[in-house]
Image 1 (cartoon, rainbow, N blue to C red):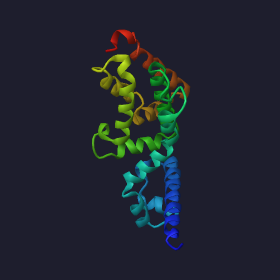
Image 2: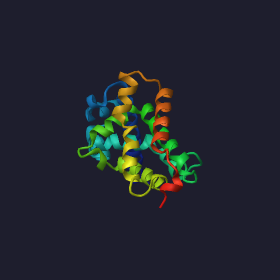
Image 3: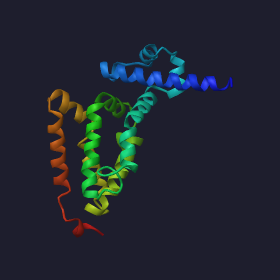
Image 4: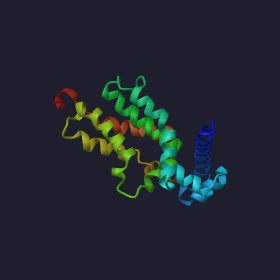
Length: 198
């Protein structure tokens, strides 16, 4: 029995840290939030945070993953229009719309994650996951030689820094952004799938 308490404490501390980080990121720019700030807000020691997440990027990554989980679940195993049984021509715009909505709802967090990676954003695990998924969906539409580039081009339209600029600096309403993305995706995919299929 005694060995269970540390695990419960660790789970409680992790949940408190994630909730505190989410609250702080929503109130101020994530660039200005330190691990010490999160520890104070969560009521845990800074060493506890480093043990749980490794570093600030690890904390951001964990929070992003937790918030994104419902979208991932819908895409990987859910029903149409996001799930795998959906025809690619309907699924691609639905997945991009879901990503845009996620980034609008969590834009400070998404921006923090995209800015926290120390390497090229294209090497980040979260980016590679979406790119591989879109590439597979796009192959029967645009063909194997173009699906990789097309996936990059479509993902560029939902980058967190662009979403943040359009929403906050340009004041573009959410539904307008969604409509623009749908129109852009339709233009990119405007082709006869039978012609390009190999």
